[in-house]
Amino acid sequence: MVSVRGSPVVTAPIEAFDTDIALLPVTQATRAIFTDLYIERSLLVFIRTGSKRIVCPVGGELFGEAGDVMIFPPHSMVTMENRPVMNDGYRAEGLSFPHALADAVFAGHSVRSSRSGVQILRSDPHRPETVLALVKETLADPTLPAAIRRHRLLEPLVWLREAGVRLSAGDADLPLARVRRLIEVDLSRPWRQPEVAAHFAMSEATFRRWLARSGFGFSRILSNTRLERGLALLQTTAVPVSRIALECGFKTPSHFSEAFRERFGITPRQIRSTQD
Image 1 (cartoon, rainbow, N blue to C red):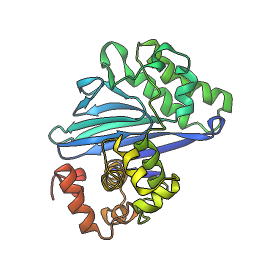
Image 2 (spheres, one colour):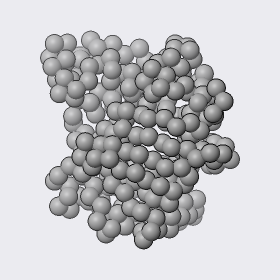
Image 3 (tube, rainbow, N blue to C red):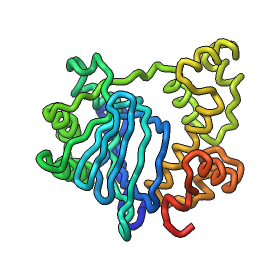
Image 4 (tube, rainbow, N blue to C red):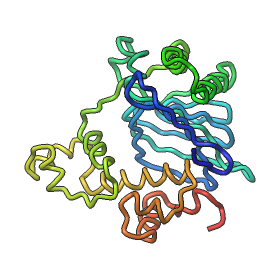
C-alpha cells in the first residue's frame, strides 16, 4: 500500500477474472490541460474536490463537479482539464475495471454495438458516493468468499447500466491500442520502430501505413505512452520524480521534465505542488 498525501492507494486482484481492478486516489495541485490522453480500460472518476472538464470526439464537452462521477469507456482519446480549488487542490478517486468485468455486464447489451463517449452521473440524484463506498468496503475485506466479492464488484457496472450509461467495448485491435500495449510491457526499454514492426510481422513501410490509421506516428505514440504513465504516477503515488523518469524510459529527470512540460505545459513537480 502506498500513501499519497495521507490517502491510500488500494489495488486488489479478482482471481475469477484473472486480472485486476484498481482504486486509486488522484491529486493535482496546479490547473492543467492534458490533450490526447488515451484511456485503455473502463474508468470511473469520482470527483472529490475541484472540477473536471472533458472533451472527447463522441460525447463533446462535459463538466464534472465535486460529488459527480465521470465514466470513460475503454480505448477513449480525450482532452482533460483538472481544475483545483484554492487551498485544497484537485482530488478524485479513479476506479479502473478490466475488460472482462465490463463485458460481464455490458456484453450483449445493445449499446455495445455502437461507440460511446465520456458520460457523467451527477451527485444529485444518483449519489455516486454510495457505490464508491461499496467498492472500498469490498476491496478492504479479504475474508469475503470469491463469489460474493465478484458480485459486489459487478454492482457498480450494473448500477451504471441501470442509470442509462452506455459503455461500448472500444476496439482493442486498433493499431494505437496494440502498439501501446507492447510499449507498456517495458517502458524503460529503448524501443525502435524496426523491432516493433518486426514484432507485428510487418516491414517498416507497411508498419508506417498501418500506424497512420491512428493519426499518430511511432515516435509520438512512444513519447505519449511514457509521458502519460508518468502523469498517472505523479497523480496517484508519492514516487519521486527522478524514479518516475527512469521507470518511464527517460535517461535523466531533466529530460523527463522537459518533455513533460512541452507536452502538458507544466512541470512534473507542479502536478504535486504549486511551488515549483
